[in-house]
Length: 553
Image (cartoon, rainbow, N blue to C red; front, side, top):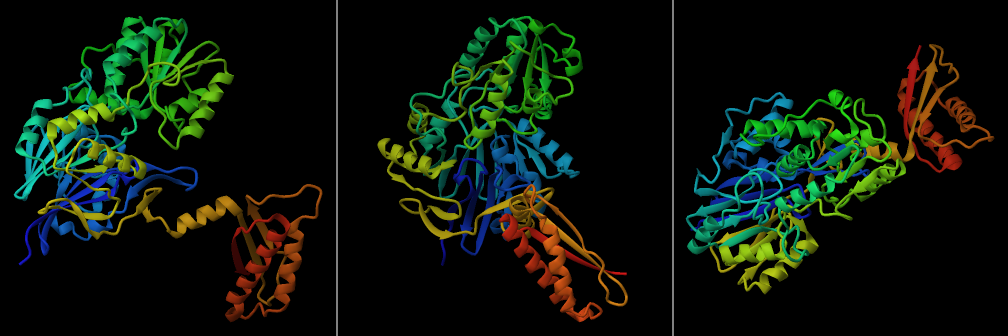
């Protein structure tokens, strides 16, 4: 007879930073119950036109949704919750989250006009839930967002610690410190495997404290005599509170700019955070405040084209502007992949004779992930029998394996998305199978596969342009002058236009077909398409997406 077993399967976030989605299963092979830990997104680049969000392919767990006990969310960053509202309709299961995360999840479902209240279960901080054979204990950690949680997942076969995102911040400013005593107790009771964050494995020392960043920001702002604009991750509520604190200390009014900044501010206030702050003013009121008495806090720290920062710097924001001698503080790090657009933004700021302060020239940011000394403390507290690195690219996870061996962890395992790992029983975790994994694009409001025709067509359009030819055919089979239109196809100056060549070619082709014979229409269309694309290719080097219409009048 088959024995009960505990399985782990990442569908996103292992071999990449972002798009976290982790599955756990418990039971006999023919009767396993599953949980999902986190369901996040990553952001597309310019190589996929028209796509903003990329999600893990959930097909493997959708096929098992009748055995799915619920989705458990560790914290509210987009790479951990961003896909929930898009994928949940295919799962329709319970959702478990602490209050701040639950508040942001609720807003996401409201935008999609889904009432999630009967499925969303709010979990008090540091409490437990039981899902089938999974007893899940939420452990308070510190990170760059409110209410980050590790999960102690206890089963009849043993206990797993899923760390989520974390660091050790001795003074996080908002929220509690990392629950060292609880982690030590979990470690003393025995942890069979720790599934652990790898993001900062190459960084020595410690990640640093939000308290130290606040002190540094205040020293910088006290020296400024004109407008100050700080841009940061909206989700970092501790940083937000620090900016409010600095505004009050320097006698400045504060103005929030960007939808995400307002959304996070309201959610934090609703959950009982951000008490005792000065009230932010509206942008239209901020315009009336003296330059040395206003401080802006804006979204768009990564140079996002539609972010508030980009619109302000390019002069397209209706109410916020910067002038010669003002100061912009980038209180954030550069997310890998965003370098080009962020440096373009910063170069524009410099051209406008505005001062830039960033982590490159001042202490204005600390990471939310553990450096090596933070990891050493976690290992000493938890004393795991095995470690499986996640939340990193392959180079991060391989280095984390090496680090775990240095820390004398008995067993380590390097994995990737789709690996099905048997955690227990056994002396060490091992890969026993492979689940289908991949990516899903959010195309507008529709989830599509990465090889969807809409994506292929859009890439073709972006590279080669568009050509449309309409033939007007009379009842007696006569053809009028074709209507030819195109977009995105380069034209040479002072040279014979390729449209004339296409018109001649179309008339020549039509002479070889009987236009009153509708049975020949398909072949006619294909011949015109091939020959006209050939002409464009010869004249311009492009192979445009081509559409042929035949209109009978």
